Image (cartoon, rainbow, N blue to C red; front, side):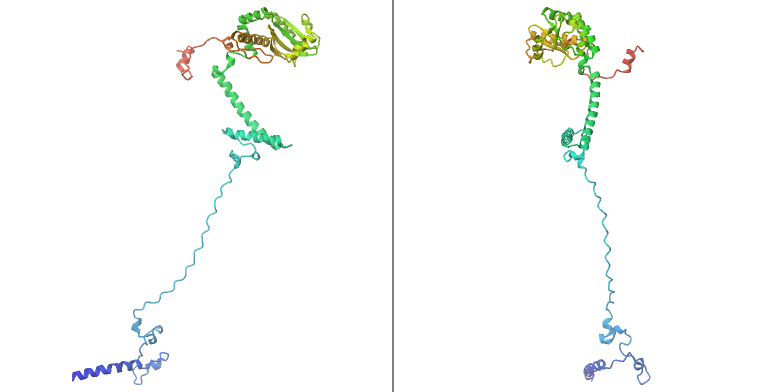
Length: 365
C-alpha cells in the first residue's frame, strides 16, 4: 500500500509543477485585481514583493539573491592641465672680444692682462687697421688705446728698473761709470793723474784736435771758448778746419781751408758743424763731438776713446770699421772714484737691519 502511494506522488509531482508554472501572472498594474480572489481573502501573486527590475520574466527572485549590485559607471577623469615648463634661462651671449682666438680688430683694444700673445695680436691688427683705414678716427683711436696701455706698462717697468738699479748696485753702471755731467766732472777730477799721462802720449805722438766750422754757424762760435780751454788744460793743439774758407779769428794760426778741408771732411762724413776729431798718428781719426758740446764732455771722450784705442793696439784687437779705428773698452770700469765697501756673502739674501743693529749704529744703548 505504501509503495503504491509513493509511486502515485512521484507521478503527480510533475503535473503539479506544470500547473504552477502555467498559472496566469497577476496584473500588478491593477492592485484590485491582485487582491480580489472572490472568497474575500487577499491573494498575492508570486513576485509581487519584488522590485520592477526583479520581476519573474527575468526568472525567480532567488536567482537574483547573490547578484552584485551594478557598479556605478566611473566618471571619466578629466586629464589635469599640463604644467607649462619654466622658460629656459638663456645664457648671456659669450663675448668673443675677450678671447684671444676670437678677437678681431672690430672689437677695439681689450686689456690683454698677462697674455703676451694676445697683446701682440692686438698690436699688429690695430696698427694695420689704423694704417690702411683712410681718414678713420675710430681706427686711430683704438690704436691710441693700445699705446696708452703700453705707456702705462712702460712707466711701471721704468720705475721698477730705477728702483732695482738703486737697491742693487750691481745693476747700475752709473755707480762706476757716471754719465751725468756732475758725475763726469767728479770722475774727471779723480782721473786727472791718468789723464795727464794720456795727454802727454797724444802730444808726444804728434796728435791734435781738428775743429770743423763755418763762418755762419752760431754753435761753432759758441764753442770757441770751450775749445780754447781744452787746448790750454790738455796742452793739445786745436786746428780750425773752415769748410767755407773763413777761419775763426781765435784759431787763425794753423787754420786749414779750401781743398785741404773739403776732401777730409767728405771722407770723415762731416755733415754737421761744429764737429771735433782727435787725430793721432799714424792716420787715426777719432770723432769726439758732433754739434755743440761742453768742455767736460769733450775731455772725457778724448780720454775714454783714446784709451780704448791704445788698449786695442796693445792687445792686438782688430775690430775697426770703415773710418773708425779699433777700440777695446774692457777694463775701463776699474777706473772709478769709488772705494771698496764691506765684504758681502752673495749667497745670503739681503735683509733689513734689526732694531739692535740700528740702535748700535745710532749710538743708542
